[in-house]
Length: 199
Image 1: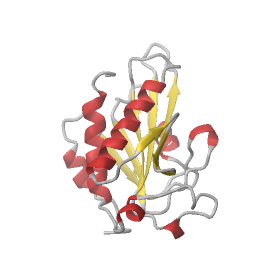
Image 2: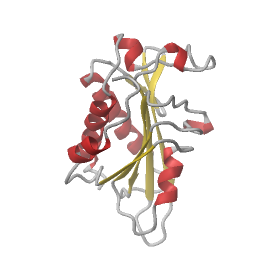
Image 3: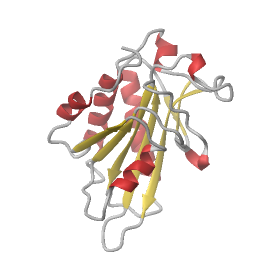
């Protein structure tokens, strides 16, 4: 199970008739999924598109921090949304996404908490993070790019020395690998169910 690719068609089939997941792309590698989705869209692109990557070469977190994305070890993805909120009001979106991540982790046996503004921790170690990037759109609802990273099957050696003492994963906590596709489906469904208040 560890190091197997995400099962794209299974994820697509699980998200049929949903807003989030109406279109799902999987890239083998990209600089960051937030950048990839921004390069993909036009003014007419509908909300709900999701872009996954098996690895990112320049993944980023809050305040320009680097997000490490070991190949086929975690979930690295972004969602395009057009929420009816002000351009400067991304905090509720961050809380929505982080809560969905925490609930999904709990479903798979890992209890985590959100540490403002966007870190998701187990104890004092980061297991996931959320990055919201807003873009103004003339005469149209603003764009919100919701980037989410979840550490799933990394072992300690998969993290650089710089973050090894501050990061964790499903596999480290549970002592075994986890089906990334199952976690992806659960998280996307939870995001979609909880998003209706912003649509």
